[in-house]
Image (tube, rainbow, N blue to C red; front, side, top):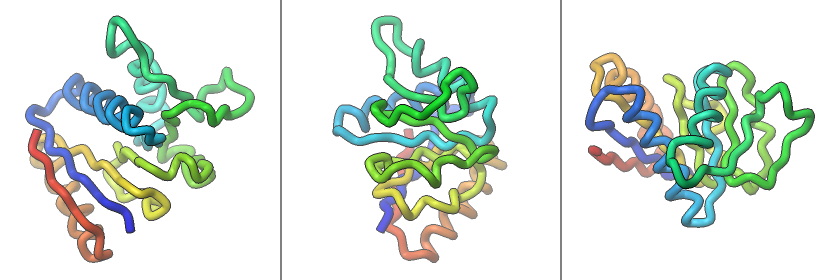
Length: 151
């Protein structure tokens, strides 16, 4: 059964969210886990693509954006894949990517149960919290182990 972790961000900023996404990816890679980032839009997927190359001045996180029009085919040799709700190719991700799903949408991904772990990031905004509470209740009703981390 999928273990679900809710990460409550300390401040409500785009920069804070992006840094947390990168830190989660880094930590997962250190633990030999593959990651699927599930963005809310192809635009956010592209922003994440750019960010993973530049978030540290001395390193980057190897990844592939599944919606990059320059790439003719998908290369599954990267530890991080980026997909989006607008083009949900995540359901076709191979089994080695079913370790960690980082959900950046406001809904529970319909395929989340394929993953060992699911990370949900929650901002301090009241709307973000309310949407996250709905997902939390849904996951709890499904019988999942839920963890909450205040950052």
